[in-house]
Image (cartoon, rainbow, N blue to C red; front, side, top):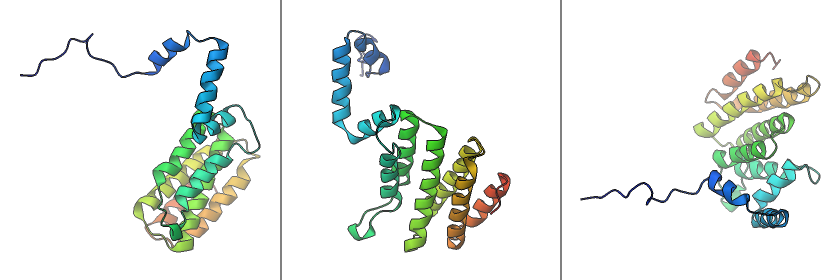
Length: 187
């Protein structure tokens, strides 16, 4: 017979509210030390803080490196692709700072790398192509939210992605044509 522990006896998983309650006890120096330890703990944390505070040159670079690694792997080193890990880089940037122009750039870059890799080595994968078309659409949506002066260069890059994707099959170019028409972009 299984006996349930009373609610008070069960341990809840720690959550942000638990952490937040503990942070109220920290003084400025303690908080700085904590942030420094988090900064030193991982490259992802460093990229997050650099993006959040607009530090360094190109805050998009670490995110692009990750996208590039997972969408255009080195096949001679038996590296594999990972749509999820490439998309996570975009999500990480969005959490760090989420500027629409930066998001649009990362999304278009994603499309360029995914289509370029497929064309370069003849990579044929239905899931990879579905993700490419979904990111293509998200890129179009994001670009329309930008000032009109920023849009033409990004439209042109997506139009080039559409041209590269012409020989993929799986309906990729047809889907992209429909999306370009829907957003009023001349293909």
